[in-house]
Image (tube, rainbow, N blue to C red; front, side, top):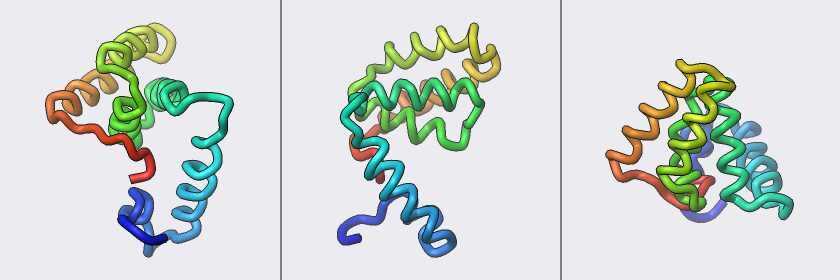
Length: 114
């Protein structure tokens, strides 16, 4: 692919090229581009799933993407508070501290594949 390497290419490109191909082509090239949900809604669903399943390794990146896809800090805070009662207090506390750190760093971007 021409241009800047995707996040998957940067992290595992030479190690697991097939997983990069699936991530970039299927997940972000097909699933994220389907017309049934907006990128904003897909981000909200993804963040909720990551919080609920305690998938902290992917959470920060998807919080960045969510902010870039139009979710506000306050909306993400509210979603995490709501999830505390359905997904567990420790999951919510980890998510909220991750979001706080991200917001305090001022970091988010709009390109979900980078």
